[in-house]
Image 1 (cartoon, rainbow, N blue to C red):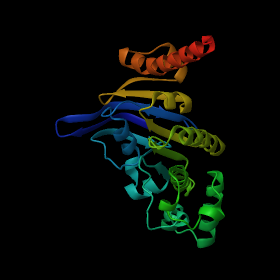
Image 2 (cartoon, rainbow, N blue to C red; image 1 turned 180 degrees about the horizontal axis):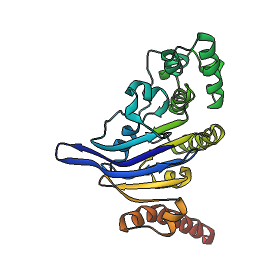
Image 3 (cartoon, helix red, strand yellow; image 1 turned 45 degrees about the vertical axis):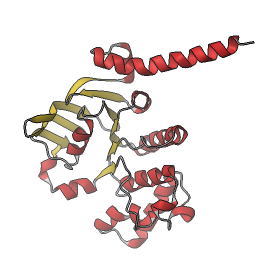
Image 4 (spheres, rainbow, N blue to C red; image 1 turned 60 degrees about the horizontal axis):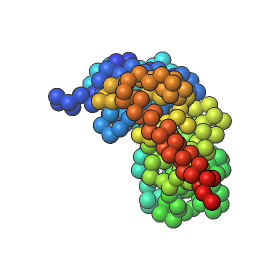
Length: 257
């Protein structure tokens, strides 16, 4: 569904993404994982031409993305921003309906789509449809962001650290909700995160990036059992070490009088 062929992005003499080649199959969720400056968000944004590659090719459904205007490409790709990007002066319904309106959908179809998506994202349409983003909790706002990304019935979604600013309980609920929605709709998705645990829990495959290059691409199990280098091993080691510390705390508590 999504193919990157030796995609490179340069800024003057600096190389942000260096000859990255990736394939995301239909219905698959690929996680781009790495620290700040690894090139993961730049790679994501090149898929819908928010950033233009310096060289290389990107294809969606076998078609080169340069074959249509950027705005037309973006209208058929769902995008969930790192910092939401909801329009504060618009209601929830108006935010979700932005892309369908641009595509010329009639009002009745947009309203039906808005209500269906709110229910899909576990929000009560009657309670939130006419409210503005500032009147919602952070978790509710993020659910609206997901609903907006799904509004025009895309087959491809791009998500840029969508749950990073949420508290752990809300983050966990939204991760599970998103997995359910993606599987139900059969979406193909690229998900950017710097969180190893999130990557392991959500990804069908994980592409680890370092310094603009791919360090390893594999399933969570493959990364856990056969890290390609020391950097990947350190990433994998972090959740293992944390789990070990928690187990030790539980063991100490069980032994306490």
